Image (cartoon, rainbow, N blue to C red):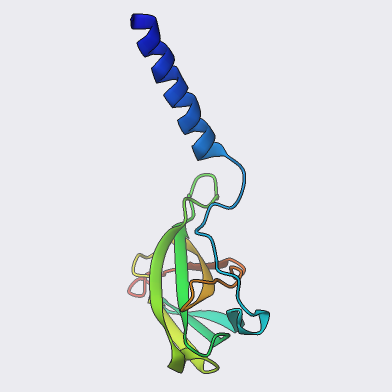
Length: 145
């Protein structure tokens, strides 16, 4: 009886490990869409002004609506390596975002803390553009400069 319970527990652990570490994409499946309406993040430019990261970009793709996802991670000060990515902001896909140059301001709040950001477009069907290149930004102490 005890060995049967042990076998069941080990089997469950092995199956769980296989499901968690299996190969393949680790994001939600995407619907097949017309390549001409695939979401695109175009002309992404950035600059840091004081304690604000300013992003300028244009979204292209599905005329029914395009939105934006921004992820952020903190740079570890000791190893200078990135931490885990977390969703920082997500804008709902809307038709009036398509083809318009937009600006996004991100408050860096904490002085002397370094962040990495990545950005991508998402459309109303749940399709994504590729992630942008990583954007490195850090806040400064405006009072002791």
